[in-house]
Image 1: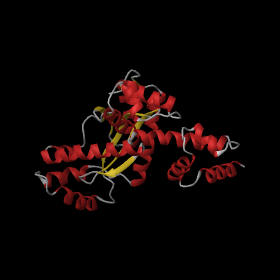
Image 2: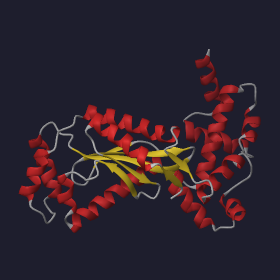
Image 3: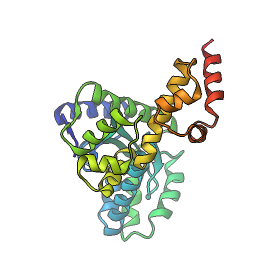
Image 4: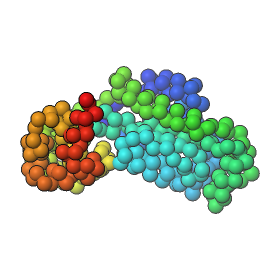
Length: 283
């Protein structure tokens, strides 16, 4: 784990979230280990599913896949779990590092219990459990509208940002992923790559790739290109007097034509057209 969480303050905040939404929310660290949640116990429906080895395994796989998606997109991800319930996850970002995740789940987002049960029973029929008992607890859970889920998801994103603003969570600055990210941010406009970073920190390239995948959701080279393109966007908008070759150089691109190709791939338009459009919008 590369972060420290203030669990006491977190629990109070999670309780407030639950009071507003009536949806259980959980905090995970960057390795997706559960730190705390409110309420502490999961819904009876999920307890029954996880009481079977098959159901518990599917829950674990579903959670990991959601985590991987949120890591890759670095944004909110709302989905339906293997048992048919709606869940949502958002990464907690401090700078460019993912230091944890907020997750809410076990929500029934159907127009009626009858409609929901027809769907859920088909998904869960292969599990070795009492479908009668599962149906009973399913009908005891409240129905939550899609609109409420969207609103709760937006609130959860705001909570993720608030955690960092209020210093309820902070980076352990001595941790290697943090040091690597700080190094990249200081040198991404220079001629750096995975090999040079690995040499600087005296570690193997495989370790660099693992850290990049876990913290950025993309490869190290793609992450560096992304930072360079973001800088190019800024320069095209704020320093329109610079030539494209000057912008390419300032952003770490030695090859002018390669810069244009990469920029168009990331933004959907050539840098000259992007700069013209942004400057027109400013007028």
